[in-house]
Length: 289
Image (tube, rainbow, N blue to C red):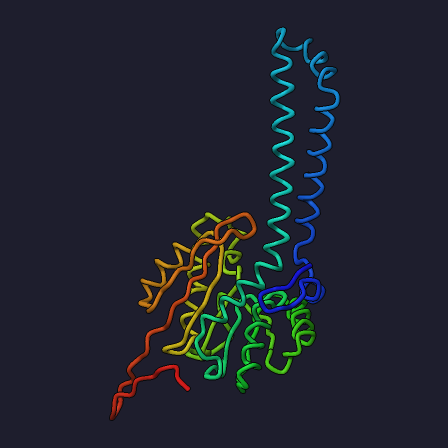
């Protein structure tokens, strides 16, 4: 199937991570097949369909109606096939490539002692972080947090298959109230997850937006002063940027638009400002080796 940027075979990566939401893929492919078959029937039996429609429409109008319906049906099939292809690409290859981009945003992984992957899912990004820690000979570890214990157990399995299990810890927890102390992590990352928080209220609802802002606040709370955060997400990136400015974050950067799961997505990177601690001497806390 070809090689990735890291010179790995896609078949190997699919074997490890699989398709996460295969039900969606089956739904898209089934309807694409249905509309393709329907449009083919319109093409084969066009004259007969026109004769049937003559009893409902004025003379000549039946051909226009049949032609328009057939064209819409064919276009629907093409759109569904494109959506299925984009879904397959977004689910593994794109997530793998974006994970490599995200870990490259961190200058020196040898300085990282603690990292957090928020909403770790199958562990594509989590294992990419662990791989970087392993490559640099770091003694650090990355914690993967997810809402489901079943998911965390599956993630540990993929970490073992990637050969980085000694660098990975998985925990079940609520991302709106992270089970970690203040200023705990050197790096926090998250991949296409934050937009799912609060979705039970409806993506565009005030309640869902408040939940997402709460998660951003938690990310800022647990990252160390001077620590780096890298968040790749869909749909709501502008509101994230506004909130990060309100929280006085530094070095806020937004990547170019990338289409993922038929929606626009961006990588947002930002750094938590270093803090001055009052005392006999003012000591600047910073994230350094």
